[in-house]
Length: 494
Image (cartoon, rainbow, N blue to C red; front, side):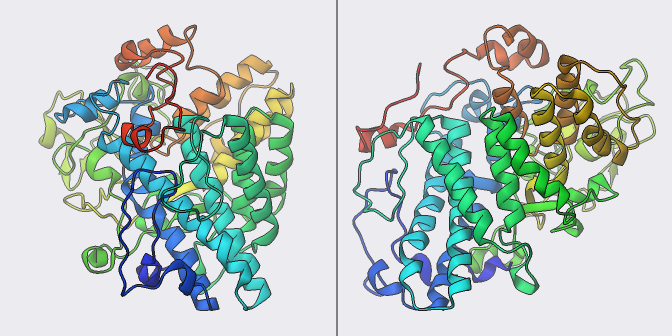
């Protein structure tokens, strides 16, 4: 889908409901929300603007790499930007710090745009199939945006479900209500959306994406049986498969491949200034020093997880070379310069490589690489986890083995217990999904962000010495939101 066409006329008055923008200013030269929603073209422009909200710093362009990955035990931040380094140490000088503020505001902007579509498109006289599809897309995106919020902020979030006035002051919804709404939105989307698209519509949400994301949501809620029931039909559909090259998933050439259920479609970076089209710029912040700012780096513990024997650096999981730059004895090219030439012969530095344009000589701010929100490998491993948590490790094994086989690894041993299979699945997810906004979810879902597990996390990542169970597992709600909306309750401990 070409996002260069997205924003256009739907600059209309899209302001956040229950968020930090309290401006009552309108542009008389722009259509209002009351006058805009008239034609099928308006409906398409509206849903396109909802997709465009995926392309903000706080949704999927930059900060998710810090919130879900660097903040977990696979990464740390030595950033000279003190507030950014402290964010990854669960410490805030201000709850309105850029990462926190952008994540909150940008996600609610997407929700407000989705609400406009859901409120207004059903009353437009237009092709019924197209109308249902567009509303389904909006519900998919609203479900995704709320999933983003609840996994980072918990249930103390307002939950606008219509295009209410920017002056609305909604109360905290509660986790049960938010989860239920996400499930309802994704269930409706799965029914309304087509299985695939063609031409310039490729990249829009499909029924498979909705069903897969619903399975992910149910898994995150630890509803193992319900999650399995949603994930199995995605596997049985035959529409998705693991691509032969793991690394190709994270390159410009690997957009919308057979493994992809849903990804954020970035545009032509040359249009960024003129048409509001942006590329993925996470790697400019998190990539290797020199081509990037290296404000987020892999932990040594994470690096070691790719080696069956950490004293032998010649034998390792092949996914390492797509995930990190390191002082590989066989030689490692870093943006056209050998690692040892760039960083020194004896360097032990580690840098994230995934989603970087390592085939260039420098990392662009706006990389033409789509961010994969949901891959088939995730479907397989989530289904395996859902089976195992229901006491069926032997049944789960073949689905883990499929993912391992793609990377040239042997099948898991037979006869693993439920606990052993749980550990095997967590390890597989660890090495498969680095820098894909997964690790924090895994820690939350498997209840590892606890006092009992904290010494282990501290051994993985020294930044966890600043982690307070029952507090640090959620981000604080921005203070600007609390100031504007006294009906919102701040998260515990903040």
